[in-house]
Amino acid sequence: MIFINPFSEIFNFLTQFIVYMNQRSPTLLILRVRAFKKDIILPQRIDFVYPVLISSNVYNIKFFDIQPRRAFGYYLGYLIAFILSIPKLIFMDYDFVFIENPYLSFFAPFISIRRKKILVEFVDYYPSNLLRLYKEKHFRYTIAILISRTFHLFYTKIITESITTKKTLESLGVPAEKLEIIPVAIDTEKFVYNLSSRKKIRMKYSLNENYILGYLGKLVEYYNLSILPKIISKLNSDKELNHIKFSLLIIGDGPFKKTLEEEVVDLRLYNVTFTGNIPYNQINEYYSSMDLFIFPLDSLAIKVGEVLSMGLPIVVPRGMPEDWIIDKNNGIIAKNQTVDAFVEAIKEYLNLDDTLKKEIASNGRKFAKSNLERKKITFKYIKILNTL
Image (tube, rainbow, N blue to C red; front, top):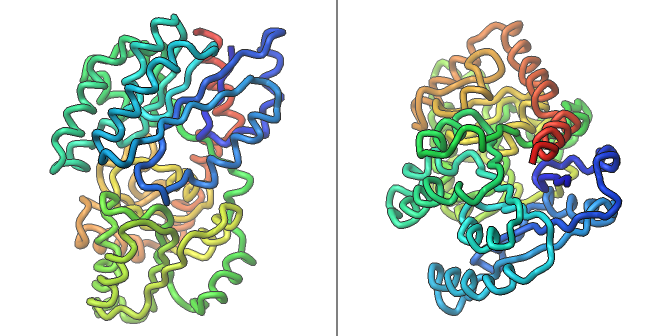
């Protein structure tokens, strides 16, 4: 039985799976949880993968969406939705279950009644740095640890994105034989530097001669985005760098956008541009316009792989998974997640000779092609699934 991780964007290789299939297409149940806020939707990069999976006729795909009962509040609304979904999951017809969110492990004991195999994906921030992310929300952290320590008994396999998450789960008692590292797949043919795109975006926002620091993604508080305006403010006031005209390009939207905009006003910054959301097929164009990508969170995200594939230098804080970013090899590592640490790391990068800068960009591209390329990720899934 074959399954494709919907986050992996490997639909161009679906035909390679057919040789592994039985005569009868198995039914794949994808278990998803919907956001509490109605205006939050799935990222476009996920949305456009599902139709291809469905039209391929390789699987009979079913989606099971957990819709929170919003009238009852956040926690009670989800709890009620979970409880009401149990009978449906017990009696639905399916062969295999993929759980997109570790919190949906709540359903694992009930699915196991059907003796179905369960594959669950633990994204990198879960649970390796949940205590930091939710330091004021002890309930959520407690549930995360409970899930990690106990619910693995019902999983057939657990997919993690990095060795950091794998080690964390092992320390919580998850058997090593259940854990597999499969990073998110990147379209390395799409995410490649393009000079004409660089000129196009820079001209659009009148940033032709500027040195652009960029961020792309959801604008939420726990991504440590509050340091971005402060970073550009400190760089602007640094006398050693007054020969460089810095700009900050923030791409994306989210509940923290208004706070960031207010911070920009308070700091009297005139070199910060908010683009809002952009079409998925233009993401590589915006990456091409940047000179340095700032990622202030010590966890993986698909954007890290995309940036590496672009050959765009990236600055991340210490704590980023050790098997992804190596300091001054394929990226720059700040000592911590503070403004001063990032400013210091950026200045250190700017002072490197041009040859080393080019090597860092080239090594990022090489890493993506060697470790994140879609076809290679496809075969990693095939190898695992053939052992289930």
